[in-house]
Length: 373
Ligand SMILES: NC(=O)c1ccc[n+]([C@@H]2O[C@H](COP(=O)([O-])OP(=O)(O)OC[C@H]3O[C@@H](n4cnc5c(N)ncnc54)[C@H](O)[C@@H]3O)[C@@H](O)[C@H]2O)c1
Ligand SMILES: C[C@@H](O)[C@H](N)C(=O)O
Image 1: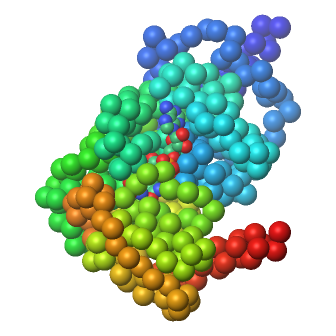
Image 2: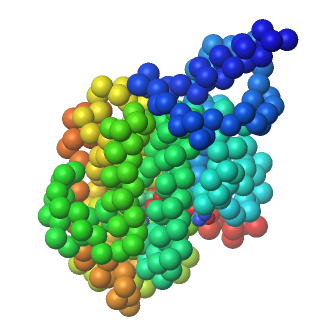
């Protein structure tokens, strides 16, 4: 019996080592619990084949938002369904619940987070929980808790258990005093939203943990992400998702930003691919830990022109939301992502014409299915 116990401890230690091969962080003694929960109930070290053990065991926090479900399905294709756990504090729709492992996780509950990581032998964490720019301004104290306190919990758990950690940042991490056209990776960052402030904090804390403790922290600053089958969660770039739905359903769209508001944008397939690519990039290819990534940049008027090519009766009107407009006016117009392209070969697939065709095709076929039923 003692031999089995020792083997389990050795294997458990090995499984907690960073997959990157970088320096394993030392566990602070206050976190070295001996509770039986730290030995996973499903542990079977003798029968685990090498190929299974080589796959990362993934946890996605805040996974029921615009991006998480797509990320889970993308990663499951690569690492296997059962190796990717989606989590959130909301109840999942049936199709998501049936599509693979789902678990309740509140990032403000540190012990719950730690238990999930330990019991499921998690090795990679994608931290998607957040309040976005517009909803953050409407509830600053909740945004501060989720985006800042929640991040601290995630960083601590990741560091203690040697996880590879992905945290998305955003164009919103820049502000009116940043160069806006284009915005480079390294420049002044003085955002004026709680969302932006919390994301600069996340970038700096993640990099601090990397230099101080060897945490394998990786971060991409996403532009506005456009997806067909998931709804945005209350951001400034949401108009560029809603426009397609309304164009197909109603032939018209009321935009809450001014026609000339230029912002960097990306189709979700490119976003998910960039995320996996930076996570799989060899550590030595990363000259930085936080990268801008970009695909295209357009204004509402330019997007409407492109939609018009496919929906000739389409009409756009403008009813500007002053909160979102002020935010957009302080954000980058174009994003310089040359470091991502140079270091780990980032290359987007979708420009504006392909984006519009893909989005309209999706909503068109959805609406034809709805009409047929
Ligand atoms: N969607 C974009 O255009 C975009 C652009 C740049 C960066 N990002 C970043 O990508 C990540 C995912 O974005 P998204 O659009 O899917 O966001 P979203 O707002 O759609 O989803 C966020 C999720 O976080 C969950 N959440 C809130 N409080 C939580 C808590 N206490 N514990 C656990 N989960 C909690 C919510 O239930 C929600 O499902 C965010 O960090 C966001 O800042 C998104
Ligand atoms: C840009 C991004 O971070 C998010 N879509 C927002 O608008 O808040």
